[in-house]
Amino acid sequence: MKTLTRIVLLSLLVSLLSGCFLTKIVTTPMRLVGSAGTVVGSTLSVLPVVGNPINDVFREANASIDKVADRIDDIPI
Image 1 (tube, rainbow, N blue to C red):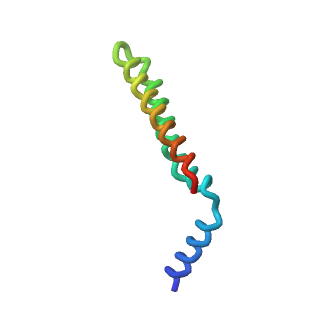
Image 2 (image 1 turned 90 degrees about the vertical axis):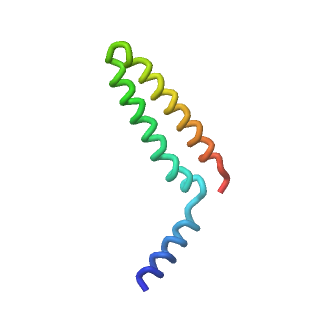
């Protein structure tokens, strides 16, 4: 009975939420990971020789994650 109640409650919640909110739930963790990568890249950029290329790689990865997240946000649900 408890499982059935949870399923019904979850179904009602999902049906009442707007699509935009649902896509934000998916894309927010993606954006947080990309931002964390940028912070790591910035921290490593203080290392001589290898720091700046690593920082550039993290920036490019963050930009790619943002592009994918923007596409997911544009999905009409």
